[in-house]
Length: 231
Image 1: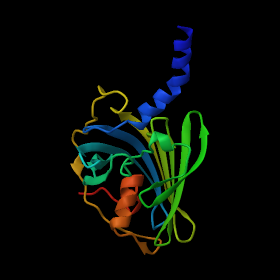
Image 2: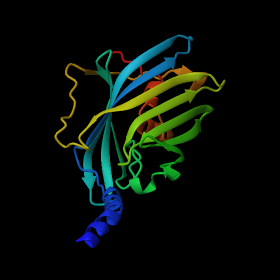
Image 3: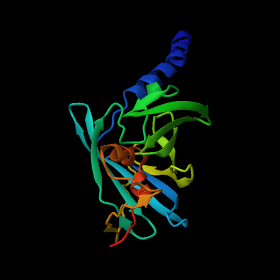
């Protein structure tokens, strides 16, 4: 009996690791993040936007692919951006704020972005990436729990003149990933917004394949290119 108990104690971490490694996403799984964006407009004024980033898995396919719907809700003005649906590998979906548990504590590649492991503190793994889009620097941070889910995400956009253009902080609000009974949040009375692009720091950011990747990964560049919510 003592030998069996000793075996369980020694094997428990392995069982937990295998459980994490075998975690799979299912259709209708969602992650809702409260995000605050502090943004400097071209005229020098500063504006703050409060929004919800809703990432919802809408399809799981036999070829190890999942489809994720990303919808951004402007809480203050009760508008939402046109939803974007993207496909990704279900073992390492780059359209979610996620890093597979077996890779935690290591440098990883998410899509075309290199995520560097910074440190481990208070049960969270901190990751950082830095990219450059047409002279605009994007610094991206994720605080990830042991399940691989980011509980906090922060994105800085630094302009060509090294001035801070925007600071976006997203914190996990609710998800049914951990508790299947958690209901999907609803946004009654919200209407769809039109998207207006603007010239920031003399650099016109255009929605392209590369920029779309950052919209899905950072969940914020839709605001960074000044997604003004107007009818």
